[in-house]
Length: 335
Image 1 (cartoon, rainbow, N blue to C red):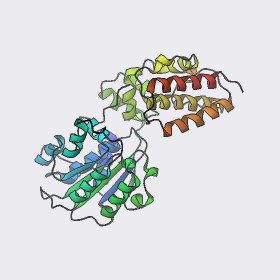
Image 2 (image 1 turned 120 degrees about the vertical axis):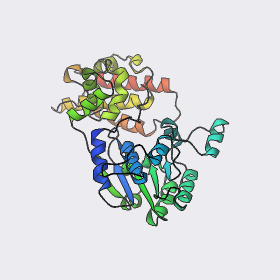
Image 3 (image 1 turned 120 degrees about the horizontal axis):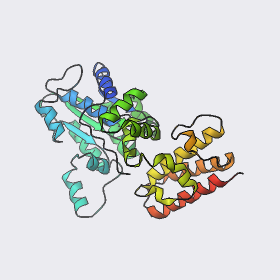
Image 4 (image 1 turned 180 degrees about the vertical axis):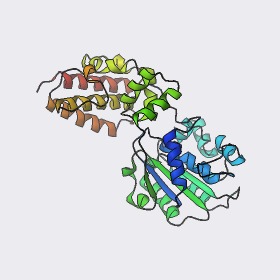
């Protein structure tokens, strides 16, 4: 599966409603928290657009002024984005000249964490005078990718911000942030769109109603995460029995993280059915009547352990084979 596109030409309705609500409140630092796929990045970007906009309204940025255009082309002098380099590249944000040179010259790969060097640049940015005279903004995403040293460097600036600077931190795993970071931000839990709103939004992205239903179920009801399932919407209902048969090809072109996520969902639904509950990610008729409770429990624990190291530079093909073999054993066990 390809990486989901996080940029959107039109703000989703649940994001627009939250933007208006947050703009009506006072505060210099926000923490937007919730599971992935609910639009933390989009909401954070909508807030900084409005904070810096020359003709902002209660609903948000105008979208047509010089400030809005500067953000659109990733060149606003009063906006600092603090992200892992891999995320910045995926979202078309420019890296610092030094970082870009190091990556271009093959001295290192793009970082998957927010680097301390980038945080030092952010602290220096916060102390500058606003170039456009409407204050400055710092957007941190995903905030949980700060290590303890990076987070402590940000903490000092959050405690005593210099001048007119606002912060918005967006996270899919806010529990991983330092308590001191969380305590210095106004918290906002992301709103979860209802089924009809999510389905309507997916159809606006060019997805058919039938596909949207499968994709939304596969993503656990989170519409933005659902988009990454578009290439395999037809495959998803067949995945449980393919795994039971040991078919490694079902995960062709998937990353190890995506494979672990799919297997976790399959394991969850099988355990739910064993408990007499309804499955969440698959239709009940698509699930095999297989796997004992104890074997499923061990499998779930093993998948959780694997998720902690899934980004390590293992051989992806061998890892997927091992994961499918492990799943097949769990599904065929009756113990």
